[in-house]
Image (cartoon, rainbow over all chains, first blue to last red; front, side):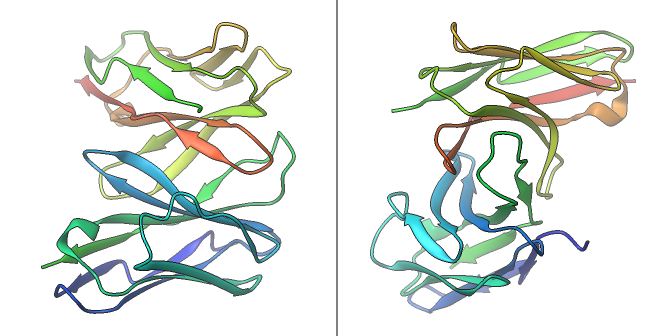
Length: 115
Length: 111
């Protein structure tokens, strides 16, 4: 299996522009997570989906952030408009299910820089 | 609200030493605890997962323990090597899906 695939690996954009991050979870995994990592705040859970349905989006910082999962093999995280404080590494992760023995698998992340 | 802390924040040891990393969590109602490794510029790799009903897990030179009642876990690394240098994060699963991470311990193993 190719693992969790994220694109792009790096994104540099100007303040005010729309940014879309993409994720393909591991085939057969039905839970998908978006995390943001910064030096100051560490790894923060933004939102997670189960069977393509958003379960908890309480970590989404504000209305400028939105996430979708139109099918089991694809998810997007969109920031519109982007701001310099959104600069961070955004990770997507997936797991096979909700059982206590299911591990979490991470993608390589998208390094976002908003100028 | 579940909070996860890790001590120390950074650790530097000479090659060959055994070492212990600590993780604490505030709410003992967890489904499992995972230890991850993160190399610079990379994603996280799961090292060990301990279910709430288990006390420890072992993989090679790594041993993780869990004391749910006290809200603590330790990651023991035996005979450390320079290749072990990385950031180690613990994470607790607090419900069916929610996973909360600690801030990590940055480990440097000096040849």
